[in-house]
Image 1 (cartoon, one colour):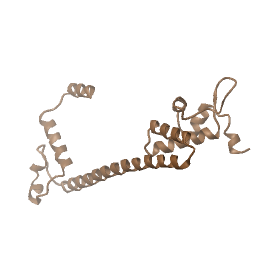
Image 2: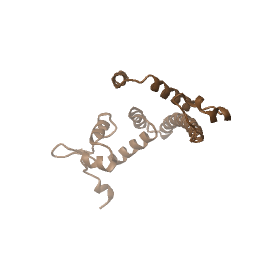
Image 3: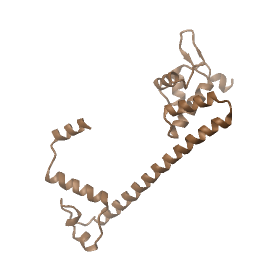
Image 4: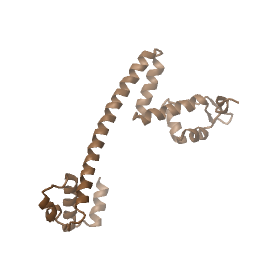
Length: 181
């Protein structure tokens, strides 16, 4: 028996297990026009085949690349409307280029965060023997002597901790603030 024959007549739960998606997600894909059952059973159950499995895997691949379901829907619509591969590829290229720019921007922000955290850890490692008070790094004799400033993230955390120490926030205020966000 071929794999295609094995994968015909799949109920939605079977397709969900094979793809790692939920039945609800698959129904949403159907509502959006991204997925169509190959047939319906006598009991009116959706039945899917190999093509549906491949479609869901394609949708997942695009989502992993950062495409929203609306963008996936647009892409599939363009592909269906244009039987000229060059038009489809141009559309896909534009989407991929935009996504790549977004990913590069995120990487730059993450690399900046990584450098900031590495600096903060190095600074905090150098303070292992310090007798810091609630007043923060300015109270540390070693830091004043060595004339190295605390990284911004450490200064802000220290100032926040010092402010909370001198003006404790009640749990009622925290609950109220959390409800407002």
